Image: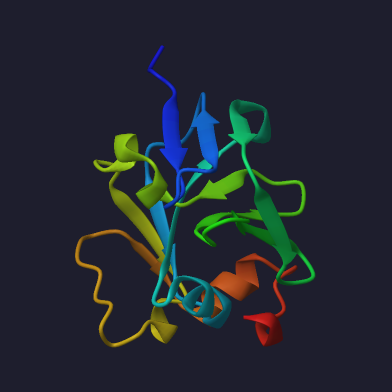
Amino acid sequence: MAEPLVGRCLCRAVTITVATHRPEVGACHCGMCQRWSGAAYFMFTAPPEAVRIEGPVTEYRSSSFATRAFCGTCGSPLWLRDDGSDYELMPGLFPGAKDFPLVSEVYADRRLASVQLAGDHRRATAAEYEASHPFVDGSET
């Protein structure tokens, strides 16, 4: 069994330990993720039962279907979680995630011109993503 991943926010007040996860990264370029991250949101997923969180976390209900979390002390983004789904954790918090490959991009047609992600990975436009995720209301992104 692989060692758990341990991640920390900027001020180190929040520690996230992940026992099992998918060792791959996805990127989102929707408007909410751009505003939250400043450019593109990158994430890897882990099931709720595999995630242990310690420290001052503040959650924000950012849409009708998801909550975003950040450190209550320094404001570092920590995760996004659709209702009842896995955690989508920020890989930059976890030194052990530095070699995870990028495997997908969503809202690729809405990316900032400065964010060109190279490689042969899956890309979906806003229309393609929303067609396959009917709970997403395009007005919220």
